[in-house]
Length: 419
Image (cartoon, helix red, strand yellow):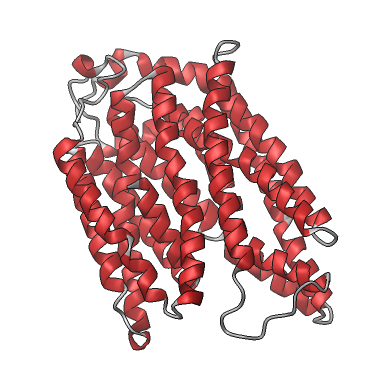
């Protein structure tokens, strides 16, 4: 299901980027609501309802014509609501079924579907627009599979007791109020810093997904290996390559991150945030190199993208695992929801548009030559490695407080507060 959600979302981004902000905005609004519900009611029923809703809206939106563009935009917002139910709750079920290295591995399997779905969504979305000349058919594949998966979840996925894997189930007598949950999360320094680091990752990936294919195309125009596009639908070769790279690097990053963390835990108990910090700082180096070598070598730029994205994606599953360690079971859905809210609010909800604004402002400062169009976008994208470095610093801050917050989450008295 995680795969299909990202698959559908990425297809929509390749169709019309203007709907992306609506999707993310509705996701942010709905996530805290589903986080609250996920900590208090049957989670797999909420999951199934969200998946059925997402599938139905996605399928319906594929029949909307150009005359009702506003309705299509509205449908993208409704899809965001459906996805927020799944993204906010599903990691908490995994957290209650597994613990320690087993939980890291299972969360890694879960987060593998993000790059896989996103990468294939790029490929199929771009191919569908060119092959059929009609983007509607790209949205008619995943809903049927989504409804099937929702049914399987409803009948076969267990609903574990909160805290079962951590052997806290018998000690959790009462749920805390929402206000109490939010105050506790705000005081949880590991959670706050790791959430800010997650936002830095989201900022970079959101900007890359929107602008890197165009940046590489402009690089080829500067090198005179491609002609400037003046048509409505331009060649999607760079989107296809970038989608394939995103798919492969995401898979590699999640697998390498889980294996590295498991190995480093034998050396230090702070392995989770430290691995994330090192990978972020390393990623920033290769992201910077993209803009150095792109003018001369497209292949060199792709190599830098490959290494930079692999290092950037190392922390996806580990960040979720950090949350499971430092947040008590009855607050995890709320914590996951607000971490997603923060990641989108400070990350990909605005980064593509911020990069575009900076690039446009730079272009207006000089003559609109082909070379300056390429350089101005590259200068704007240089903001991303600085944000990635900031994310690495946030993970280092997480490492300072990780052990204390983990020990507090294990104390039984904080889980017995009347609502």
